[in-house]
Length: 67
Image (cartoon, rainbow, N blue to C red; front, top):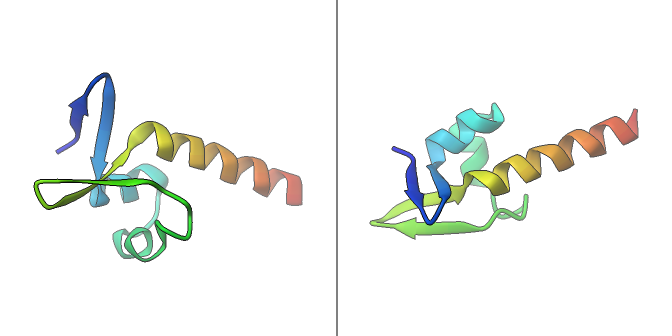
């Protein structure tokens, strides 16, 4: 149920979990700690797909720097 507004794609919690390869519960428990910005539309928690992709790139960089 991805929603597109103003050239931006917003993902639900489940879709966001799939996008980053984590469990839905893990995302729900950690999205604030991870610094994600959320939006609520019709009672549904949404995240910008572009923000998730940026976060993933940051995680990859941090992981590669540790190794």
